Image (cartoon, rainbow, N blue to C red; front, side):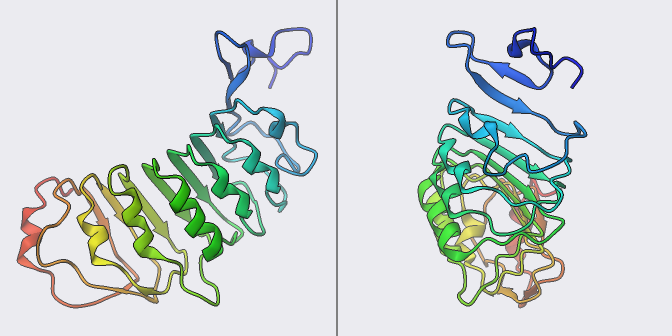
Length: 230
């Protein structure tokens, strides 16, 4: 943060990118910056950056604080990365207001929670999502999350990582047929049931990880058609 000097233009600071025409901050990348505290709390000035498109706060010590609902005011965000931050509590329902999201990465060391209502609205509104990474986010509740809603992302979804999310219920086989899907990681969801499709796999699939799930049945011959599988 040595370049952050009030006597200089913030657009020249490390981790800050501004729009060349408006001069407004559009990218804030502060990962591994040794910051601490309630950076996404109620008084955070980040929420005033209404033109912000990319926000990366990975590997910052949030000291167990939560994300304020004002995150939903950043309606121009297309990339949000919050991993290894020590964030706790519920992911606010207002995150579903971020309809322009393309990349969402939340890696929770302290078991953040994502309720079905928020998940359903997010998938319904952010129809351009390409990459979803939710690691250690508790998605279990009194009701099952709506997994078939992922079909709404059939034209955009490329990577889907729901690792150790305590998902329950039956995995929709059709998700393994989405045309552009390349990566699926559903590991460590021990109550997630499912079967592999007998035909019409997503031919672009490169990565499939189902360790620690309740998937059952046969591995079909059609898996041989996944020529890009690594």
